[in-house]
Image 1 (spheres, helix red, strand yellow):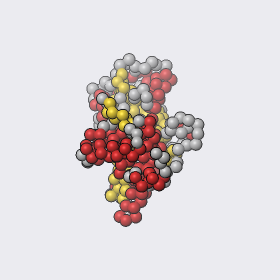
Image 2 (cartoon, rainbow, N blue to C red):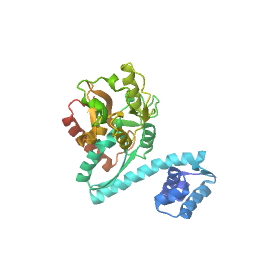
Image 3 (cartoon, one colour):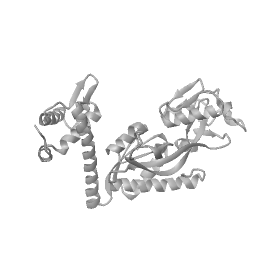
Image 4 (cartoon, rainbow, N blue to C red):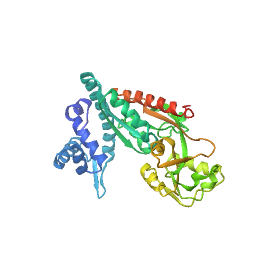
Amino acid sequence: MKFTTLSIARKLKFYQLIVYAQVLESGSILRAAQALNLTQPSVTKVIHELESYFGAPLLLRGNRGVTATPLGERILQRSKSFIADLRLLTDEVNAFLEGSAGHVIVGTLISASAWLLPRATQLLKQKAPKVLLSLRVGQMDQLFPALADGELDLVVSRIPDDWDVRDWSGRNESPVLKVEPLYREALCVVAGARHPMHKKRSIKFADLHAYPWVLPTRDSFLRRTADALFAEAGLPIPENIVESLSILTNITLMQDQRTIALMPREAIRNFADAGLLKEFHLGGLLHFGDIGCFYSATREPTPASLMLRECLRIASREHLSDFDDSKPT
């Protein structure tokens, strides 16, 4: 059977594509049914309809859940684009009929999620309380492909040092993503507020080496910075370490008043103000890099995402008024 644009348009439904994409995102028909508030037989029926129409299996079922067949993977990638455009249409219609409404999905990393995004969210809700904001925390290698596919509207994270010469996949080709720098983030070496080394007037990086440390996971950009700091000080990586990107886990570990961590300053800001943590002053700022807002270079932004980008700019200016040494490049 040879398909045509018209034949697919007559038979294929957006609803079926949404269900299919959710099944693969969830990893099982049962979890997809729960996420969509449908019965499991209803989801199974949709999958059978799609497979019957295309005349080929779209899912591989195994002990660990379902995955896409080669044909199913092609349909999934196109479905993501269709769903993103449908969400854009929905937001534009809502914005036109109701005023400031819509849905914006944002991916973020540890630093931006600690202070910048909460403040930008407050500003957004003051301006447009009907906008639904969904946050997803992950690593760059997860968030950037999702942004390129239209699953996310924005990603707020550190800008890679070599961003100007590559796209999200690392290939030298026309970029699919753009970035707006917001501010420069600083790193700090921090511990519980009653750590004994806080009593000393003058501290060097080497003085802290023997204590237990919490370091970022090895697949993160922050870990590369941490490794470079120890190398520049002529020190090996401490032997007693825990690898973690969980803010709450790190803060809890530091309450033993011995453990030390290297973290973005914004990630510990509120906890330092509350008296739980205290920064070690080592004679200069440790720069993490620029924090930016990434968006699609090829897709029309939703009205809600444009409002959030403006709120991110306002929140960044507030940040810069507090820390004059944290300016964007």
